[in-house]
Image 1 (cartoon, one colour):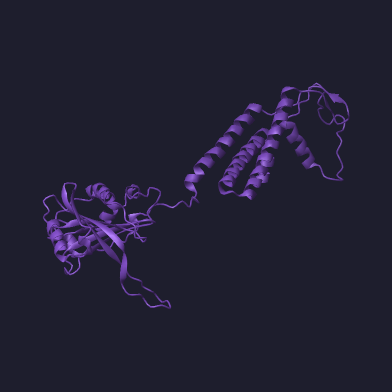
Image 2 (cartoon, helix red, strand yellow):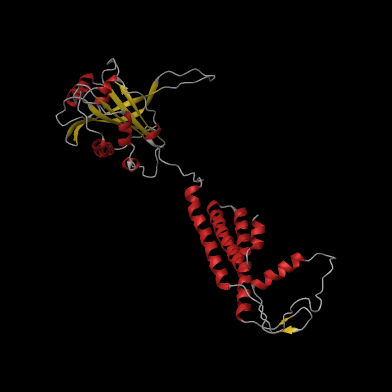
Amino acid sequence: MLGLLLRVLPFWVREPLLIAIGSVLGLRIMYLAVHDHDWVAAGLGVVFLVFTAIRVRMVARALRARRNPGPVASADGAATDGAVIDGAAIDAAAKAGAQARPGAAQARPQAGTGPLLGPGTPEKEPNAWGQAVAAVAVVGALAGALWVAPHVLPSDDTTQRPASCSDTEHEELPKAYKKTPRPVTGDELCEALNRPDLARLLGTPGQTANSASGTSNTAALTDGKVAEPEAEVRFDTYTVNLSATYNELSTAQYVKLIKIAGDEGAKDMRTLKVLGRPAVLTSDHTMKLEINLGGDHDSGPVEEGPLARTLSVALDRKDRGGSYDITVWSTSGALPDDRVLVGIAEKVLPTVPERSAQ
């Protein structure tokens, strides 16, 4: 179908169209070849560019012949002055050759059967301006199609995109979330934590989030009466967890409990204020649980995981109970500086919907 269309089109429409197609495809293939280091594609791009160069040369010769007509030999060997060699003549010769058949008898005109063109009768030439306008219209349509194609066709871009919280499952909230004032949900915490600049705040600006999730849970040993939503964002280096606890335990009381218990977290404990609210920094080990689903080995026992650093910030400045907890850890055991956790809290917590402690 395309070959038939190209044969039917006039010379001054067909050639600019072929030049436009060859140029666009050649340059695009060469760009992809250099980007992907594909030498086979580079060779194909060179073929398209050489093809385009040949067509450009043909058009240039036709234009020169059209501007500077000269004597051209006729079929019987006699010279004919003023003949013009251009695209129209090429098309006429091609059509005449296509109609001829090997061995077929050529009909000769008989005297008096029709008018004969005298030597001074000029041959009607095609409208060059019309062909030029048609060529421009075709090339414009092709350029428009190439511009629209990337927006319509599916992209083959494999660049890693940051994880989205929209992937989390929306389940029915427990009864603790239906009370007044209503606590924040895991989805809301995820939206607040999964910031575009979170990797930069962690000190790893070149990384993107591998996963982001939020859950609307309740605190343990409360019979589902205390809401405890949480969100988690994972990077290649660090994992960040944000949770909210709506109980009556104030930050001051929590600090006293840690001192009384005298556990390992008390050694690295540090009290401070964040956003004008009481806060405390503590350290503790995460839990490592290995679950084997249908394998040859049994599931492993609960083990001690890497060390984690947690910043607990009171829900309000009066410290009437409840807290936001930001925890950071890594599989390598490395921890960021405490200023990193404070910076995350100062950016994230103001974007969390305001809720009072229950």
